[in-house]
Image (tube, rainbow, N blue to C red; front, side, top):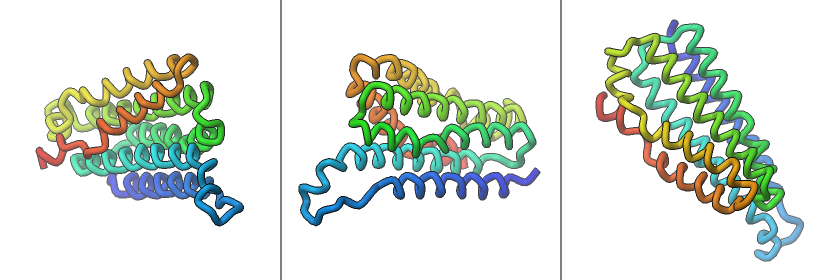
Length: 189
């Protein structure tokens, strides 16, 4: 199967996710800068989530540059990833509205963990389809950053019940690890 429909659909879903997140930002009922202060946690959660969705979009884009074709398993693996990413607006709003308290921060981390796991499943499905000796396999390598991210998320989730600020710091750290697009594929192309 041609990969172009999968890419177009994924781009559309990710654009909708970002749109939903920005629509959650409500305009304050005052005209002074002080009226924006109560919105700071909501805006900070939006910024972090926007960065995360952007990271997924960028890496998905790079990943599919190295892909020649897709099959049914890859379509479902991609949908699985998009499902978890589609929950981002909900956990973003919940964390921001509740000033990064325990359960929202833990659930935010759970969505990050599942999104990262789903992306890993997608890459494995692509490797299975293209073969271990393919250009894609050589470009992806060991995926140390991906594995490390999942470990960080899994650590941050239970930590959220004792120190949600540390969990948020871990989520920011992982985002910073990924803010530079995955150069493994670019280097091979």
